[in-house]
Image 1: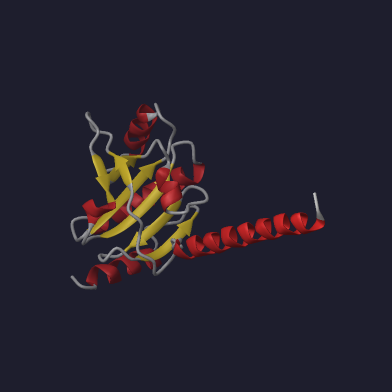
Image 2: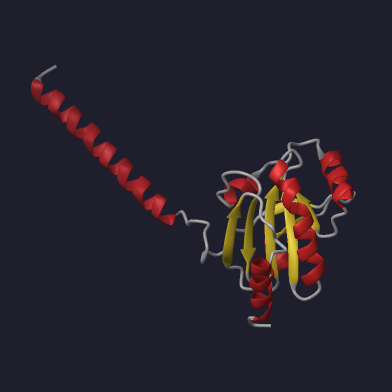
Length: 181
């Protein structure tokens, strides 16, 4: 192979790499960060009813939503669930919904049902055995929570357990319920 031919191959490889990098840069720009101020991504999960009913974020449009991603094996999830129940009881019926989506592996529906009974949870418990909500919300662990306003905009994110019935969290929900009511 001649030197000219070798340089031609190198030029083609460099051009292909440059085109590939440019295409990647354009696609990265289109990936929206799931953070405060961003529109909450759509998700799909199922109720624990027989038969299960598919739910999505669109089912809660017009309400203030505390979206919680959790699992039965998660100790911090167990810690925060009672305060989520308190928040739900205080503000439910006023345009506020707690929606907790379990990412337990397939076949563990019974463990989720047992968990709900143990903690006497009355808010919406959904199930996403595919864990696709983790990708949609760019969640890096559980519990991961998102407070979403009536227009579908994320107003707060929390990774890890928190006291959802604290004065600060109750004031946030109260304030959001007063917006555009």
